[in-house]
Length: 424
Ligand SMILES: Cc1ncc(COP(=O)(O)O)c(C=O)c1O
Image (cartoon, rainbow, N blue to C red):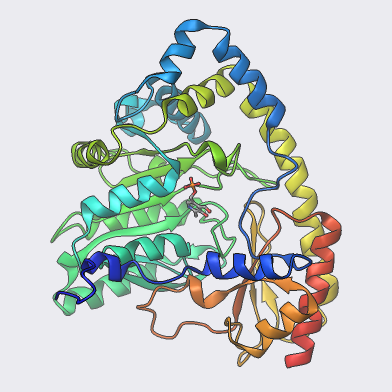
């Protein structure tokens, strides 16, 4: 199909204005609003001093300074790729041999969003299928739309994607002759955006086993998006989905320093099955032949000097206070309103609220309007649902506790509670 405006099909699939820019416009128009919408990290805790120290270490070593100011390679700076792999294996308690992995499979990208885009673009033809949670990370849903792919959302529970429900969906697709179209599952395995849930170990193992067993018509991969793994405030870490893939041919593991250190530095990565390395690097070569090298040297130096772990401690302490404040305010101010539910996340940046059936949270809903008048912004849940969901829930919303102070979080939740009471 051609369009008279001369734009490509992809330009049309890319969609119109994003929810992020719509909400940003509201915030600019009314700066006194408490935004519980933006998924940004806390401004005050950004590692200004630590970054200065790491940069100084780079500038004081001419070899490093030259390297940082020069082009790098498409795949990324080797010491950084080794450090990333070592960290993942350490957290998972696995050896490279146990997971059939080496640093040759680590690709550094401009944020993990670039990795998600590259992998999607290399695996998906128009109408191909991605199975994901309903809800899911809305930026990736946009990316999939951009590619003309179909995201099929499956209802989640407090432990994320339900393996039996995934299998039921695969069986339905097989009956419809569409199994060969299923290219991947997409999961945010730690403190999901937006649902806040973390997939437990047994489910991780089950999902990997299902992807392998159903890879009959074509390979089914799992993109494991571990963007929030380091933002753990309570409880123990869980081994990644990659840790349950000893052959290393199913899970595409992606991570980022955006949440754990700084989103402005824009360094993310993927640990890829060997089969995907060639295509992803070929596309990345065509796109940018390597992510900014100075930023990669900076993150390497940050890790070598022990500044990353130092920062994580500070960050976890700061966000732990915020999540406590947010959940306390929710308990006290939203708890008394009948029919509101939320899962208590132990990490990440989000609390996903379910309002009583019949309350619409959408941008043009009375609730959204009341909330803005009361002085608070949230992300309407409908943006987090893939378009192929049988019945997207209208009564969900996402709150972020990243950028606001504990006092503002309470004020924001109070405003939201007032708005909800008004529309009930
Ligand atoms: C689930 C998830 N994945 C990936 C990203 C992308 O982060 P970046 O591209 O900054 O690494 C985000 C950012 O909000 C996210 O929430």
